[in-house]
Image (cartoon, rainbow, N blue to C red; front, side, top):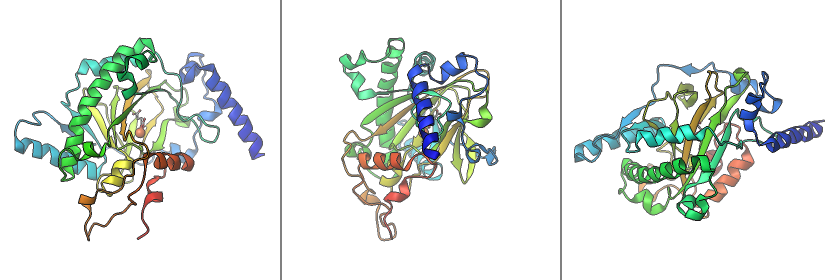
Length: 342
Ligand SMILES: O=C(O)CCC(=O)C(=O)O
Ligand SMILES: [Fe+2]
């Protein structure tokens, strides 16, 4: 029976995918009920633990290099936020507001796939588009981008590369390492853009925009519009990550938690299905190692007798991704699989 159901589900997913109209297409057709493949189990939909007192830290990078004291102050704030939250917002980061706004505006046009379309798991109420930033630096690949948003994507990804350099230094220093540490490890070398479009949902209580997960990356920079819906799990309660104009959300991924030997946290987050009258748009930029086979583990300089390694030292991006996918996005972290048995 289950096999028959699975076959049926797979067929539906395939049919939906082949329409190429995405979730937006379902909404545009005037549907008032959402298809079964988008319905999430009740335990993932309960919103009993939302806390409105916690505030995701917002860190101002203004005058970062104005003086040594100022830089220290910012690094302390980053270090605290990375340890306690794994999630924070940054303002005055140097990416011009118009570049961010154009990226969000142009984005609406061309979303076509849904990264979690699979028969076995409910899909998110969203369409997504992904591209590898390195490849678009090359003019010939650049042609592969949808023309309507080509200019915006290229412009935005240039700024992401600049900001990556800044954050790479700050995060190294926040761990007490030399500022070029992460850069020399090549941790942020590869950047992938994932643009999400969350259409308004007729039954938002039955689905999620993005189900709970932690990112695999070393670092994720997220641009969100003013709609809201992103939540992060902090001290076991869901906390809103409110839209702040001009801000970017910084979110540390599983590989950062491994290399920092659990000092910095990769936290679980999710996006509620859009309830308001307007669709939500966000753009995530994931930074990870270009060399998918390079072994990573806890940074030696952070280890001592009282702080022994928590993970093995030969985890490649490829291996991590393979396990993450195999495990499925059940909301539990893939990290525990890579912990050393002490
Ligand atoms: O859309 C968002 O705000 C978050 C998306 C996200 O978590 C992801 O792409 O990993
Ligand atoms: Fe994420």
